[in-house]
Image 1 (tube, each protein chain N blue to C red):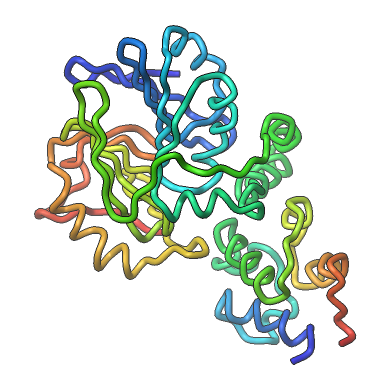
Image 2: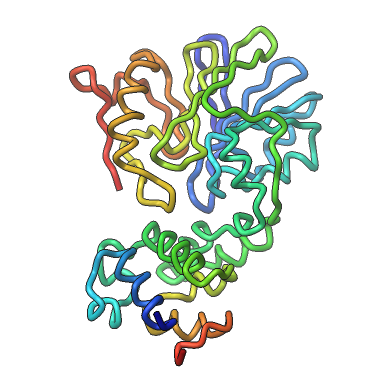
Length: 235
Length: 80
């Protein structure tokens, strides 16, 4: 687990060893929020004095939801995500960690590792129902801070961005640097991402905002801006 | 349509290839059948045959031919 200081805040990041997805944790007094949870024993000591955890999902893909059950078993928690994300994770068929398993099998075959078996032992297939959902946007107060949620289409129907105090944006897999945005998943849509999401994000996000992506390192929005436009690659 | 025709059509539509290309296709033979494309293939097969495949079968499906063998487990009869 590493951490980033942004003004007076410390945001902890844990990279999921199986598929390099980012989980972010912010702790303040006896409360914390966790973005895109996965199992990490170091989180236990970090959340030792915490009484309330809110779990925020940037989208419904398993590499960003695999730790919900683990956190729910350990901490009183509330789950927030888009309505479409909540609907997706409530279905039995979507408990299957298909993409992670497929990628791990490929890695094991190429590298002689045994990560898939290890992952299978750790992963608990569960369905979930979010406590708070929204269609297009939502504003939640968290202590003295503001959390602003807004849907972001293209990577998946249930994707959203989460802006913290108008200076940090948790963007999941919808905005990354040096990694392509994947719009080819079932229910992804490249046209919508290009024609609707990018112009929306160019208006919504500020150039000096710190972007906390779903994979890869945090970056300033200005790092991926060219001539006032967000510049991303696709896969 | 027969089950084989439905099965072949899923490959054709998912990857934008011809029936002839589909029938000899293996994982990663074409750019479109990578790990991301595989998710689309599985979603389309499950929808076409109204089945829910086990994760291990999804991992094992690495060619057109292998897929036919695996789908037989879900009572998909390719002789029909």
